[in-house]
Length: 268
Image (cartoon, rainbow, N blue to C red; front, side):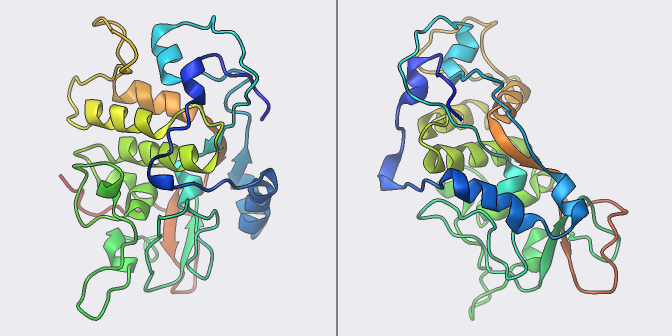
């Protein structure tokens, strides 16, 4: 994106365990073409300059310190949770996940849409995930591999695609933290690093009045960020987002966008 960082800690690599994947600018342009199955889909996938010319690390945001001099490195926006969960008709992720992370194996054909009608709602994401010979769901990489203490036997895709299915911890928070983790690995100039994500998760996973303060700061009671603040901040770091918030089955004769997204019984 060519934007200048305004906080030095936004340039730390923060890429543990050797995981890395750096999609080129061209690959991000292909994302729009790959999901543009029709005019409605094209309009629902929006590219925007989310960072608005600034690049604030979590520390700079919390401290309000915008005075760090430029250090010559670029800052790159990332992809939203609704973009990372997009899959094609072959059940493969439209945007390749970072190395070491796998998507689930599906037992039916799915489509991303702005909403599903009653015949195509998915009440439980496990219902569309295939099982192995022992009956274990092929969920892909489990979410607790990234966020310790997250719901067990739950894949990353389930949280990205069905955040409302999870309430404690907040599925919405988890989906944005997972997107930020992927962005940190995929785009070296992304302002949020994996260690930021872990700090946010450890501070906020308990819910309630929990607040997050970057470890580089000594926060007073008025400086911390609550769950809503962190979600709002992470949302500003996305350069590509998608209005295709629903995942629907394609069996049947209609793919009408009327109706609600089926979420089933929410997990506690």
